[in-house]
Length: 431
Image 1 (cartoon, rainbow, N blue to C red):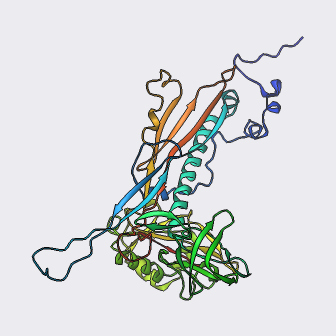
Image 2 (image 1 turned 30 degrees about the vertical axis):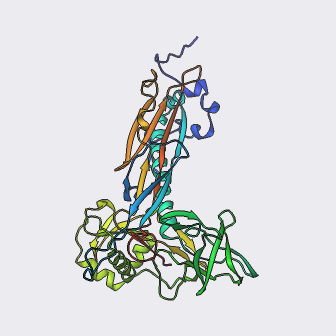
Image 3 (image 1 turned 180 degrees about the vertical axis):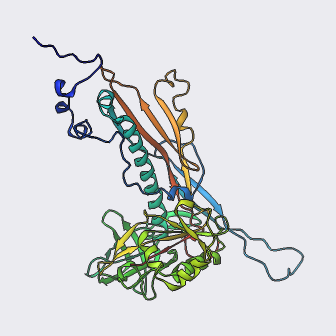
């Protein structure tokens, strides 16, 4: 009789056949032939938009709304005083709001199964959750920024007979008006003045679900008719293109478009970021700019930029040029992908996180049971990483979650400069 000996502590997959009992996703990372001993990184975008926000932590309950107020300027007085006393006046104010919402996602890791893999599945889960947290908050901040700075300008998507309803591509920038500096829902008593294909009209109601504008004056709609709010932020496109709907593949990016954006910011007295405005550009924009003679000439005399150094093309033409692959796109009528780089000055966005997320369990007696760590995603934006002890009877399944509570707000700067809202950034649209 022959006896096969195995070393104590050895766990033989061929004998115990544990692999077949595991989920398919885990079977793939169990040893079967040769397997790399580490998990490789996935393709991860860079998380830059939350870094644009100034942090203003606050306390409140979930669903609570906080209103911020910013004052405008007094009108300059250039004539001498007449009489025995000075005249008086007031300055305007603007308000914008943030809402206390909670964001988060989690994963459960079976530590027995993790121990059976050559590389720690638990560490891989935590790493993947971290990427998910960064990407999620990056897009939350991006959506807030673009909803404001690309809003107030849209187009009709259907052709219809004369009526007061118009279905549009986006209702961003049409849902409210400022009444004494306070954002107020658009209504018949608080209409928003607009121009539709160059003809004056008003918006008296908005249905964001169906993307329908209720107009003050009936009209016959044609797909592509452009709608521009009287207070729409300034954006830059090729000449004669009223909206992204009209852009064609011939409308490529040039240095002149970015210089126009910088000129707009300077005219509105927008503060710079370290002496320069920052241009966030996607790869397609970068590729087109390197085909532009003016851009290449300016690039030759560039100064190395201290802003997001690993992603910087350089500092020249009054701009810090930063690669950002998370800039959103839309599709034009001709089917061209319309890219939307953005040029940003200081103070364009405010991060309003809940203060004290990491200390929610203080004083309960169980504060040391789960592990709660605050991880800084960007300066002023901290994410809670929560590790919950196993709750199953075998004490094997660990729950890991990320959480962030707060919102991102965008000040409109309606109290200074011209009548346009959102003056601290300029969106550029090209194919």
